[in-house]
Every structure is written in structure tokens, then in C-alpha cells.
Length: 410
Image 1 (cartoon, rainbow, N blue to C red):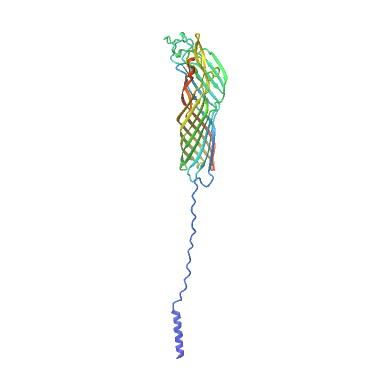
Image 2: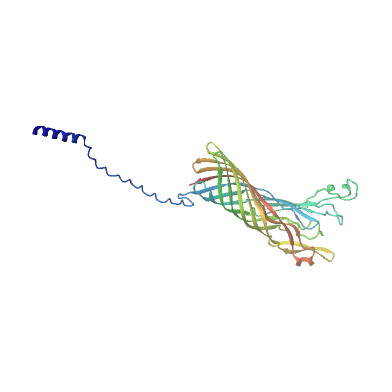
């Protein structure tokens, strides 16, 4: 019996163990998620960037300055036409600036310089008179004097007009302009004069440039300020008499009577702007462009002739005598004036940031030169104390240049 009970007890225990739930396992410790490190605050990019971005450009070449023409009248009966040719002129341009990052443009400073070389002058002196004409009133002034200056050599001739009744082709008994002949040279003189007038014109531009557009075509605009400085001299042949009491007398022939040399000084400043269109080829290795520029300046023009000799007439014992007097012409004028420029050229990329530039440029510095156009001097000795006076007109300096140069973007 006891054995039976033991067997039953063992079986019950075995079944309990077999069917009892498994002991719960201890849960695995929960992993703590790592906190990502805080991002450092973004530093603001410097306005001018954090790398060296200097821009340099230099260009230069021969320049052609358009002729300066300046007719001067000396009363109703005498006048002079003259043309000054400035030869061997040179022009140059230098630009330095900084390129902003992320295509935000450039701040640039440009110096533009123009300097003349030698000069030629051609002038003709006209007078409403002819030898033996007495009180005859002519319909127009006739050429008397011819002045030519070439590379420091001056040559002047006087060839008086001639008329007599045999020349009266229309039979009206009066000398007509087309009836005069010029058979005789009565004066033929030569001398040396300075070769160089030392005309110098400079502009200083401070401006901002911004590009826009795509890879094949894009444009650019600029806005800034310009300062202009012009110093030089312009010869001014003229009649320095107040009347024609002695016909053919009183022209500035550069030998007996020195011509007026007008010293010029012009300064001005004002806003500047430009626009440019650029066409790119061969992956921007070649760029063709055209640019227009304008500046409106407030200018101060000054001119000074220095002392010169004029002649007044006085009758002494029935003889007309020329009395020399000494005059000075000075004037200062303030006015607004335009500078205009058109340029077309090509930029050839040699290396990244390094270009060769070839361009044609024409620039007009309008109303930059102040010259007399009407001269009045004393007609007789009693008026000498009044001195010489003149009215003035402004003239343009227009130059055309072919430039070759280089640009480099660091």
C-alpha cells in the first residue's frame, strides 16, 4: 500500500512540474537612446566673402581725337576759320575691384586716361576788304591769310584778293565774290612753334557692377559716380584788330603777331551708369559684347589766353598808325554736360579667371573745352583802356580707340 502511495505521489509531482508555467525571465534592460550632438550655430558669411577675390584689368592703345574746329569773328568785317588736329594720341584704362561671393556683383574703380601727341593746325583769315576797294561794301568776307602748322613748323602766307572792272563778268559794276582772283603772295613767313599742346584728360569712376542672365547670353549694368579732370591748351588764330582801317593787317600770323593760346582747365563730377549685352560661344571661351555708358556731370570750365597783343588805330597828322595794346581773355563757366561712350569688343578666356580683351571704343566728352567765338578789341587808341573782351562757346572732345588688354580674377 505504501509503495502504491509513493508511486502516485511521484507521478503527481512529475505532472505538476511538466504542466506548470515556465518561470518568467527577467526583462532585458532598456537601451537608452543616444542624444545627437547639437549642431553648431551657422556662421554668417562675410559680406565680401571669405577668400581673396581681387579683380584687375588693364587696357590701352592708340587714340584718334576728332578735329577741334573753332571759327572766331572779330567784328562784322573779319573772321577766322581754324581746325586743330591732335595726332599721336594714346589712351589707357586701369580697373581694380573686388568680386562679391555667390554672384552678388563687383565693386570697381576705373581710371581712364587720354593724352595727345603732336598737333596740326590749318586756318584761314577772312576780311571784308580788298586792296584799292576804298569804301566799297562787299557782300561777303574774302580770304587773305593762310596759316598751316605741322609738327612744330609754322608757315603763313598772305594772298590778297584782286578785282578790277575787267573782272566784272555780270556787268553790274560791282565786285562780286566769285569775280576775285588771288594772283600775288605778298607775305610768306615761317617759324617754329611748340610741337605738343600737352592736352590731358582723365576720368575716375567708382561704381557697382551686377551681371544677370544665362550661360549663352547675359547682360550687366553698372551705377556709380565719375570725376573728370581736363588740362590742356588750344591754339586760336584770330584777327586782333577792332576795325579794317588798314586792310589785311592784324592777323595772328605766329611770326609778327603771336596767336592766342587758350589755356584750358575743366573739372566735373556726377552720376554714371552703363548697360552691357554679352554673347558667349564655345563654352564661354569667347564672349562678344557691346556696351553703352553715360554720365551727367556738373562741370566748371576755365579758360585763360595769357597776355596777347592787339592793335588799335590812331590818326596822327593824317596818317593811320597802329597802336599796340595788351589784352587778356579769361572766363569761368559752370554747366552740366554729358559724357557718352559706346564700346564693342571680345573677351577671350585663356585660363579660368584670365581673359584677353580686344575692343573698339568711342567716347564723347561733351562741352569740355571753352573757346572764344567772338572777339572784340579797341578800335582806336581812346578805347585801349577798355581792353579786349570775348564771348565763348563750349566744344567737345571726341575720341575713338582700339584697345588691347588683360583681365584677371583672383
